[in-house]
Image: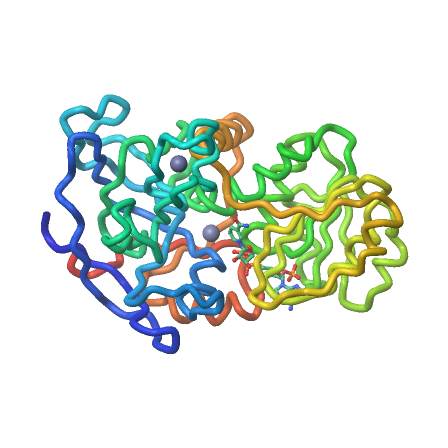
Length: 350
Ligand code: NAP
Ligand code: ZN
Ligand code: ZN
């Protein structure tokens, strides 16, 4: 298979720059995608800068991939050349353990194959993500894009969408529930749209006053500024469910105080530093603190179909790949409305 044009971080300190990767020749169950668009997740930045301490370099980030099928292996039945298709945060798993069989491939007992910053299941071959012109993926890990969704704006559903859809479903978000979303970035704006579509009464809790009008336009019924702490007093004991998407360290005890008895705070934001939690924040009202990691393959397809039905896509700023380092700087400042998506047509040598 010809060498594939890409952008990579060569070290945690280096800006991303042009790079080429070898993609494997497609096997009988593989799908080859010519990548059209790839979303820019804050996890790309955490990993490219090795903030989580697990970086494998050179690293080609990108796990919100939409492309056109250019070839399929002889046994592939679900995809045909010319169709649009998508790939999210995983490209394989053992497909056989109890977690995989129950649709939770992200918890595969042998370890999933991450789309990038990981290895294939042979545990030797490095995986490279969507900041590239082409990817080769096992059929089982390729998703179908519903008709009618704009491909560039649908790309962020593959991580931001599923990462917020999965906990909303797991904690039974339903009409009338009071749901709070913390942090209005890529994940946060999807959480607002999805919770509103599920019928919840959604409150946006943001540190940015300038995002209020957007929050309401996205579907939030209320907006509270979290900077001065007054919101935490005013809204104490109010929420059934809180979805925390904040990428930087912050006070979880304050947030837990917003929950009604038996309410749940679910963390999806992944700041690198640990945060202390007082036992009393949980004990005094039987509150629950939970985490959530992306979602399984079937649930990701379910989320895409839900978004197709409700016409939900991401609000995006389309960028050429040459602007990726600038986009990372803006992400650090919370200056994103609300997802950067790379137009891979800009990648030279594709
Ligand atoms: P993003 O677009 O950069 O959004 C993060 C938002 O957090 C910002 O827009 C900002 O919202 C808020 N924020 C940032 N710094 C803050 C600070 N110091 N204090 C208070 N609020 C702050 O990031 P994203 O792509 O949505 O990702 C969010 C987090 O989720 C990242 O840590 C990412 O790694 C993680 N993630 C986890 C999973 C998973 O499976 N669990 C999957 C994908 C991503 P406001 O301006 O509204 O305050
Ligand atoms: Zn992501
Ligand atoms: Zn498995």
